[in-house]
Image (cartoon, rainbow, N blue to C red):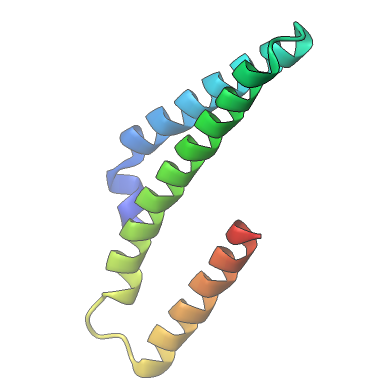
Amino acid sequence: MAHTATGKNRLITRVRRIKGQADALERALAEEGECLAVLQQIAAIRGAVNGLMTEVLEGHVREHLGAEGLSPAQRQDEVDALLGVLRSYLK
C-alpha cells in the first residue's frame, strides 16, 4: 500500500475534514436545523468521501493494476478484488 503511505498526510487531512463535516451534520440535526442546510451538509460529505475514494482508487490502480511484472492471473485477481470493493461502494 505504498500509494496510501506516501500520501498519508494528505489523506488524513481529507478524513479529518470529513469528520468535521459529519460533526457539523450531527449538530445541525440535534439543533433541528433547516432541512436545506442539512441536505447541503449531506451532499458536502458525500462529495468529500467521493473525492477521498477517487484519490485512493487512482493510487491503487496505478500501483497495483499498472504494476509491471504481474502475471495475467495476478492482474485478474487484482481486478476482481477491486471490482468487489467498487460494487459495495456503489450500492
